[in-house]
Image (tube, rainbow, N blue to C red; front, side):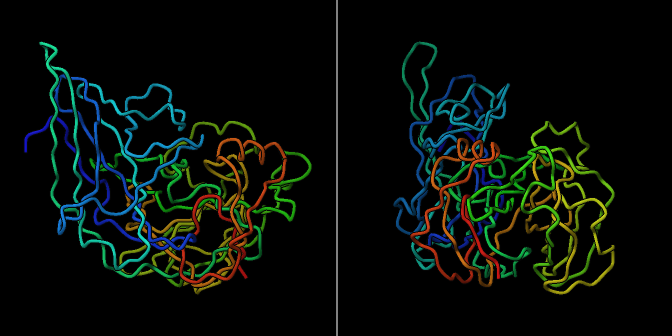
Length: 376
């Protein structure tokens, strides 16, 4: 089937993971490119079960300003990306490329096909103004049958907000992709930024420019797995909350951090630790629950938080993010509202409103963006 549009799944295979909503999520991105000199309109996009030839799953993608962007393209050529819905379109300029985001959900893992096809229809006007439409299907992309990694909490206590994570909301972690070693990767599409809330749903009281005003600052960061430390960096200063982060080298983005080889080609990454707090060194064997350092705001950070992710390589850049679930946790609820205004309110010192209607004990699930978790 001939078509002017080219696409591929960014990270293969596609990894399912159960979220706190009880749904099994397939979180991935398509890299699409217009290989013609025509302006293309994306007319239709379906995920197909190759065994039935019919659409499968339920895809949903939402921008940080609360708009439905399912099936829309985020071009790479944006001059001033905002991460809001204005960045997304059904159109792709000649020779341009971009990403389409998926959060394909199923009520049970048994419903997921062994591989997925994508049926894409694009339209354009020829030079003589004649409309033209092409519909194309790709080859099957494998869905992993590997059991999702089960880990322990990297933090303790209640009020841990997943401020930037996975799921249908295209938060900064999901929005980000990068080319490393000649390949486009999505290193952070399962990563979590944990911020601590107080009982009033605030992230700090007092001086908003003082890291010590934030409730999570200086709390213990613990190893979520056993393994061997392959990198431990300390000595980088905290950033000042609420101020622009100065330009950084790529190696400085994680700030003070620890990377642990947990075996089977998987690595755990703990970033933005407080200066002088890292308690392990390269080569150390660590056990579950061992203190690695203290929560801080070093590196590419605008407020004290823990950036945590599981990776398929030792580099946080030249890697594909992998899903994980917590062995057990208490789900306290979910923040009400749209990401951008709610985060602005939190940064302004206001408390968040939490929907606690589904609160309770959870096992082997992954927190989604805006979930609030109690780690005992």
